Image 1 (cartoon, rainbow over the protein chains, first blue to last red):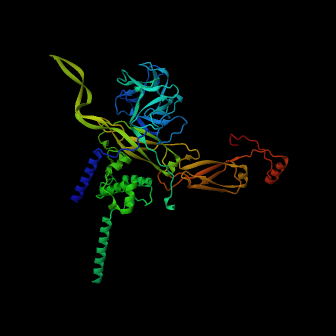
Image 2: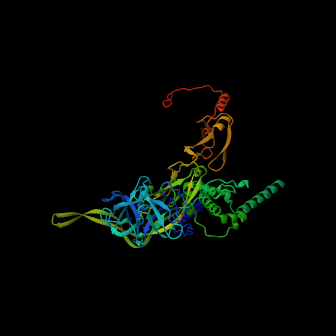
Image 3: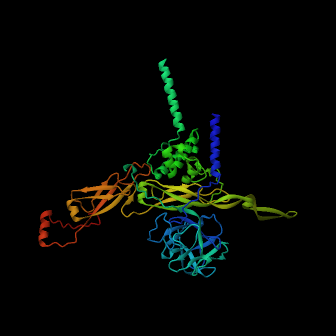
Length: 219
Length: 361
């Protein structure tokens, strides 16, 4: 009896050790950003993540503000990649370079949006989060600009707005209270090293198999 | 005497047989409860269901629980890998090469998340509510009606920041405290001061793992599947959870109401009058056969029991498929002869009833 208890205890602690050990699992071979995935987007020049929150701009459109933050563990930096309105974007299918997408803020359900309003710090084009439950308007659509044919996870890409042709950009201006230290995110017409973004943390959905049943026994 | 000898002999044979059976390796298909031709999806589904039942934490009184759980993990590891499964099918467990084995808790957590599993699936921090938790992440997972009908698995790669120990110390549990300082005899001053503890230094490192989300048959809209500990980390505490929220998408052919499916079929006036035969292709490709030899009125409904969606709680129970018919009239003009012909065939007297159709008269 004692032996069995000891064995159980050993196995349990072994399992716990395994739980805590860093598992050197195989590298995931699937390296693309796919439709429906949740990502954090890092501006590679200024090392801040695209972020939004329930704080409205005090000027311009007065809509929900979009900023760049330094922290890597804030759930308010998660954005969902979705197809354009009335477009087909099948879950798990990799996003093509040049594809039109919407970028929806996870916690507030508003879409990354830009329009002809001035940004508060640099007087560039204001970028806001707009809409309800993922539904906004035509100015929510952005095109992914990348080399190659598919948006790869470790590739720095640009986001060009469909409608105003502005690139999603950070040039380093910082806000004060109540969002001290956060950077301004705005739209700019020129493509330069300030508008490169990379997919970092997230939940990347893989393509699924068709759920149709095939009866192998019949063969 | 002879009988006793025979009994001893048969016992010896039995013992030898069992020893051989054990040494020959485990029957992984039997452990998972699946047939030899089971698909990867069937295997994942079986593992997920049994892992919840057989986890040692769920069976603290069973001394063989850890073994059964380990067997289950091994069975899944082999049968879910195409190469390993081929080898196992041909040569048995002994025929498997000594490869890198993922830990059993690793396999379990790809279906349910990290941080162990306590009774009822509650978080381990239940006793101590003071442990701060990182943010939860909720991801809307769009599923098709085909997936609700047949079930499916979605593989997901989770890349998340994980708190790791780093050299040095950091300030933690910072709080405001009131300090009283004496300025002179009988004179004191109260001031607020920020006081911090010292904690081991933490840095955030990105780690990646694969998670398996099951779309269970008959799953209802807005159902959530949590993965414990796969949310955002908290520097001073535990990570939050990752929850997948099922969103069932609209379908061009079928409408779901509970476990029932509704669909519409347009037939021609001729078919409505003389009858017809047709097939409706269902969500998994099988055909639902419909035969009518009587007159079918516009708005008529046909109930096909058992052709709806499987019930979420009991997959063997199915709802019904309700087919509503509407009639398309031909785009022709009848001449006088044809009009006479129609009157003759149908022999229906003139009706011309006038009534309020919007108030149920």
